[in-house]
Image (cartoon, rainbow, N blue to C red):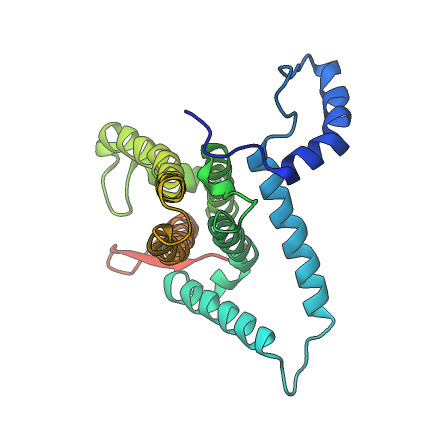
Amino acid sequence: MEKLHHPLWIVELVNALLGSVVAAAARPFGIEFPAGQPVIPDYLVMALLIVVAVTVGCLLIRTRLKVENPSKTQIVLEDGVSALYGMLDEWIGPEGRRFLPIVGAMGVFILVGNYMGLIPGLMAPTSSINVTLGCTLTVWVYYHIQGVKTQGLWAYLKHFAAPPGAPLAIAPIMLPIELISHSSRILSLSIRLFGNIFGEELVILILFSIVPFIVPLPMMLLALITGGLQAFIFVLLTVIYLQGAVQVHHEDAHGHPEEALGAV
């Protein structure tokens, strides 16, 4: 796949400062980098830039938080947190609020990453399959860990083979279906986000190369909408996957399955 971007000045700067250090650290492990190519790839530089910018921004905002007469920035942030709490409460229940750090961090990283490509001199790290795959694997591993912590290893593995109330005889059929279903989530989450952002950047780049400034503007406006939408979809699917993992199934007095949430 051809690269969408010319070398970015910030990528060249980071590699000039840290490239030799990273290459030297990787050499004892037998990792060699091709000559003429940056040691630290552009998508990784952009991802690190997001982490640094968001961290610094949060530390600055933290010093300005007020109970009375909050700033507009604080109001927006509080509304965002309230929206995430509402989503977690609706899908998981009050216990779901403990997942706010992972859900919120993913949402902020993907949202900012989607919009970075609209800033001259930068690129959207989410236009790289490496970044979207990394986000997806983080969510995938995390919700399985939470499922094991909440239900116990045996109970969590059992629900792959037989749904609550179903006979164990169907396990040979259900087990491969469930394993394929959960494995396909890695592909669907990562490809959906990567495909949308990569496609937007490609179209904007082509339009900008043909007729600069004016023609790409409608596509950039559409990218503002779809960038936020893709971040919301990723967050929503993360919450849904967590809800499915931490559900604890019990049976009522009549032997019918009930659903409850276990505490970690």
